[in-house]
Image 1 (cartoon, chains in turn blue, green):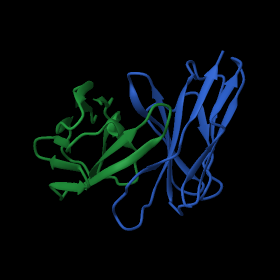
Image 2: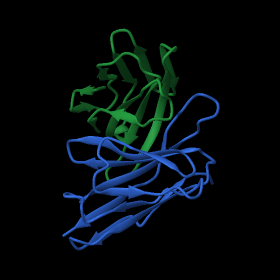
Image 3: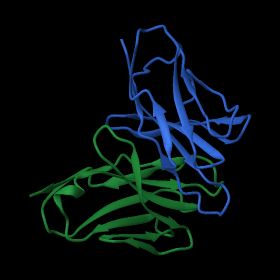
Length: 114
Length: 113
């Protein structure tokens, strides 16, 4: 089955620790994305990558970092510099060939920092 | 900067009713518009994708329309069922294709049995 996997589903960390969220896709999509979802605020774009070894900041990149060493993987690190890291994090991917640019989402990781 | 607004924020209707969810966006220069469904604690499921050159798309009991010039889209759900209860999100993609989506805050829909 093709799809996007995110692990773990729930993640708990102490304040001051960095944490890395995993995102893997086997859809052969070139573009991958990270969004953050907070209650009442909708989804906001953190980072995105259109090809391997290249990525761009989204609207709320401060306190986050990413890498794209493989086409199928786009891990997100939440650093201690992120002031309010507790949120629901969603990974997505999009095919860039064919022209439709339909976006597909993973199941999400809920991060709680105390 | 693109802004997307969804009205109403919440809606509760009896089973069997037809209903319309609204989405508006401030910059009409979009590449496409996508409607998603989100169940509590889950990821997003794509329902319908409308390209900027299209006026509507249909899938089963769902019909989405797009009026790009006025910055509006509607999602029509026919013969609603309790299983349709979820949050429905509208998102637009700008003309630069692979850039990210801009989302509305969603409409929380409850279908009463």
